[in-house]
Image 1: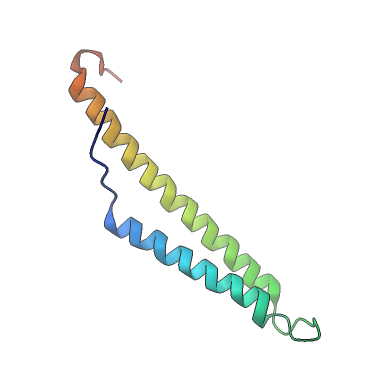
Image 2: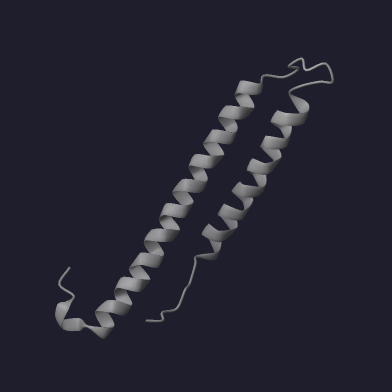
Length: 87
């Protein structure tokens, strides 16, 4: 079965932006929070928590996108088999 794969452009843009932001935060954790003498110069925990929050946002966006794709697939099934689409 083939069905059109349409992803909401705003969700895709949000996922892309979140991924890029997470990369930058990870760079901060590795580069800015620790100086040449391996001494923490900034609160690394704050940035690690921020990274975790971004990860949670990405999961939520992905879940929404997955739900939308599932609905598209189910709509196609219902179109092909209208007699058995009670659920």
